[in-house]
Image 1 (cartoon, helix red, strand yellow):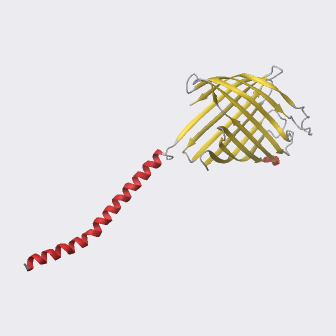
Image 2 (cartoon, rainbow, N blue to C red; image 1 turned 135 degrees about the vertical axis):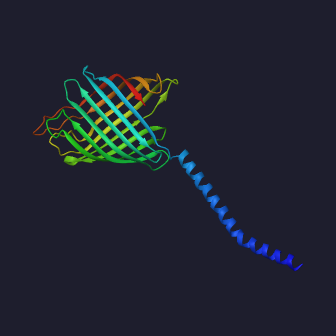
Image 3 (cartoon, rainbow, N blue to C red; image 1 turned 120 degrees about the vertical axis):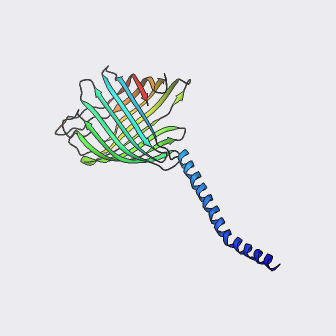
Length: 259
């Protein structure tokens, strides 16, 4: 009888001693399961790396029948929260030199539909006599405005006391699953420029139009574009003559590549 009681006491003491170890092991297993679930959720929602590229090439004619070859490239890589953007555009009018720029931007998601962006822009304008190249700091936002207008707005501050702003907004309107139109507006406001070959300050360039494209597949989309364009022209300086304001309808054909 005494031996039986002794065994009962020993078993009770062992149970009390082992219980914290079991509880610790159970807690450790639960934490590991939670960490695994968290990692899996991060992988499925925001932890993956994505990339996208679009290249637009078009031949546009103005009201005088003079043509220009224009290209726009947008490429990005990153996660839902952090991305690296490369944006480049170029224009080569008939009998004129190349006008081009390229931007490298870090993009950070700040809300459901908006990213804040910052980086540098290199621009080159071979149509002017001097100060052909410059570098600007860039800050701005990129996202969806109300009614699903894809919007990007930037502030540029750079060499030769250059200060300007740009705005672009566009929206797809689907007629069929293959045919769609994209109304757009683009504007550049020059606030200050102390270079030797400046543009006129104010609304230096504006464009309102619509691009209608047909989606052959997800990668290849030919289009027709028509727009009304306005350009203030150049200031008169010791290195260039003043040019009058240019305006009128431009139209042309092009192709959009996405990959």
